[in-house]
Length: 143
Image (cartoon, rainbow, N blue to C red):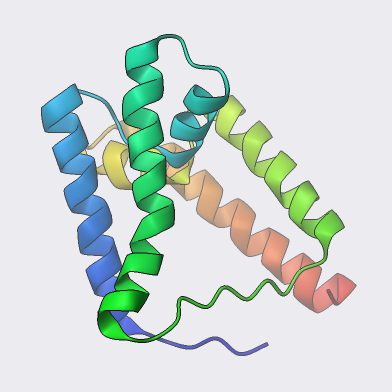
């Protein structure tokens, strides 16, 4: 499987994610983690929480569409895994995010920026687990 290396688009995306995280912290005092945002939409604790999390999720979904309209190239999403693998991956991410007290975006972007030792350990654990999983799935099992 080949991947397309896009350093400028990746840099721009990273800067926008960092900016969104800073703005959320400044405006709401909240840490931006995608799994926490999604779970807060599914099971909100208040109307205010549902409001800001819904707006942020709509931005995450609509931004690629808006960028493709502005710059004239389609936002292509290519899923190369089977549905059972996607479901299994989603479950594992959900379990890991619950056990780790946050997801990769919350720990990796926001927690590490705050120099949280818990987030640094969690991010290292995520990266090691991901590396092992990809190696096993691609090179040993052959998926």
